[in-house]
Length: 471
Image 1 (cartoon, rainbow, N blue to C red):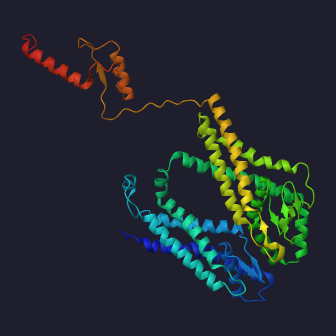
Image 2: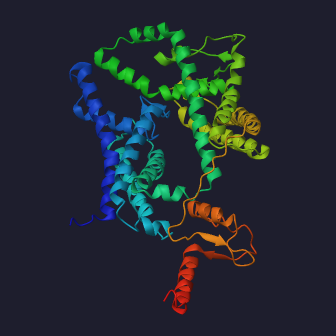
Image 3: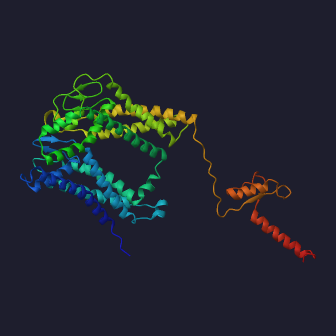
């Protein structure tokens, strides 16, 4: 039998793998891009590997200084890929830790289990230390990545995403989630799905706006004058910040909009822009000046979406109480609004010198508008869903319980000890349903059918012993 590996060794290997896999991929991509750009004529492979490591650090919110200009915006696409790698590393670690600690029966009995907390603590510690080592080695006086931001984002990724992966892979998550109250779980699930709906609508709005003026994006590419390698690298960089653009579009639909530089604003009611950098995704920006008549009506999309979502979800958990339905829709909308505000806080930041130091949505205003739009929409949707449920209640499905293996059917005795006329049918039904169907009255005695037959047999034998004709 193969000896069981120690918990600490498994967690250490998992934490190192979660760092090494995405970091190695980014460094390899940077090395290939360096070679394709000019055939390796300028710089050295070490510089390319350092660029890849800095890209991994930027995904952890470290920021970087480029020619004296601070860049603090986080490419959410790259962060999502890194988070997926951490999740997979945590899940594999959890699968290896599943045999540690109490078994499934002991877990169901509530036995104390520290397998996941211990493994997650070691996993997170190793990840944070490895991230700090990468920041110290790859950083320089020119780039200056923020060590504090690296530690914070490493704790979020490894301690949050990685721990969730460990709990899921080990099977503990299913046990723990079963103890969470059902309304809380339903609210969180509804909020996440509502957020997914809103992000999908925001993505559609961004794609439509970009397609309207796609020629400007092609013009930007042509004016950059890059070769094949540089063009591919620039295209990949654009794709990594598409999630940021989708969040900007969501802030636009909510009403407060976003800024593309100091003293600028892009919203459904007003557009104030100055000179913008040559970046293809900025082709989706509207024209500077007065907005069309129909754009202010776009702010009606978020509450309408929230209401439709809650109404469609009534089949999953139908409610006939007005207060329950309204509270369920309102809570889902508010939680979704808070989640979107957290994404908006990450999507913006500084992207260059001067005016480009302020790019992104105003988080406080986005949070307020999101709570009002999604919260009120969820509230109205909850009331409508309750009304539809009360008008057309779902069919009630009656499930007959199976009889217990050790149960015996019973019969009901009348006042004179005889079997009542309907008791035989009730006893038959009781045998099929596993219930005492013949016990129609609490005052009438019941005798198990098997015991009654045995008593009758004993009585017959006794009578046969005394009767000379039967003897």
